[in-house]
Image 1 (cartoon, rainbow, N blue to C red):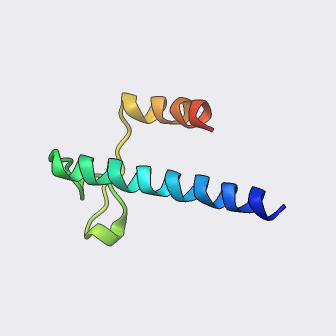
Image 2 (cartoon, rainbow, N blue to C red):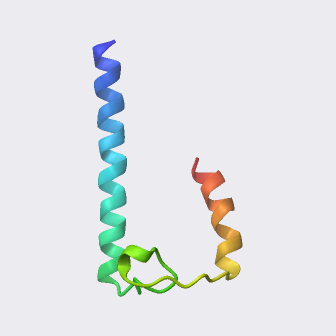
Image 3 (cartoon, rainbow, N blue to C red):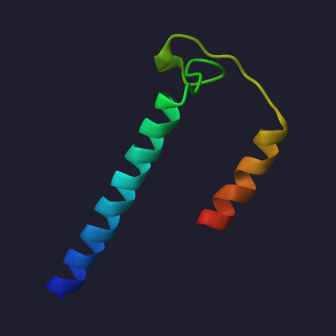
Length: 63
């Protein structure tokens, strides 16, 4: 059972690292943070766009 737990941990760590890398790429490519984003970035603007409708579909596909 210990080996299975280690494989699970390695899998989750890999997912976290991939997520961090993708976030880094987005920031490096000029993603505009602070626009319609969480308040901890200084401001918040509620915005609904066509991508807002696609986001739940992407989440279902990924999960």
